[in-house]
Length: 306
Image 1 (cartoon, rainbow, N blue to C red):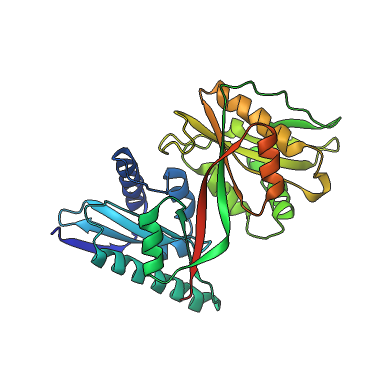
Image 2 (image 1 turned 30 degrees about the vertical axis):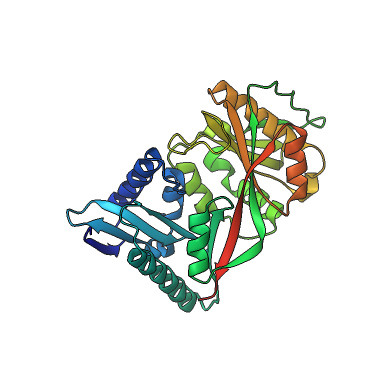
């Protein structure tokens, strides 16, 4: 049996070790979720850092970690060799305790949430063992070959597509996001963190602009070299997230942005475009299907009362 020790998160060196571990595990064929960009964005938050715990072998080599994202999601990655029932129980107990501490500090009653691919029977069984309850909503992943012809984007008269204007356009972008999703979750600081993450490509961060100069919609296209293929491609790029301000919905802006982004991804050597959407977002599913996307997988969501 391999002797392990665990400890809290201590800074940038741990972040780099976590990135390296996930890359190594994916290369070995393990199903590991967080990629470098996710880790960079999420661990920039102090409350997420406080929720993180790392497991190491005797010589200090990282073999696993867990944290709770700012959205209350369980995020974990372990070398399968060391993920014994005892380590599993320790990991879950730590995550529950982290949410309890966060709830106490904020005066909230949030649950611990988790996800698993519909086909990942081992993870589904783990969540069931620890009392997670399945939720009605799921996350659909869709893919579309870029080898097929890509239709020309069609915009309403006077609208244009261009890259987001960087630091100078942070505040209007955040306002657009909040209006589109009806939440206050996006902040200038969090958007700045996204733009500082590894593999962020400014030229793929697209916005649709109205004739009056308003930011009407956006599509953040992304390429993550350390991610495993999800939809059967060899080189996959994201046309996601995508959203439209309520004032400018039903004008075809999301479709035009996605088509424009697909062309840019193909120009960078990608062979497949992918996107994720909620099972409840029928409008987005229909838009994606209209330009050739097909469902590739379904991720189920769970929550645990703590």
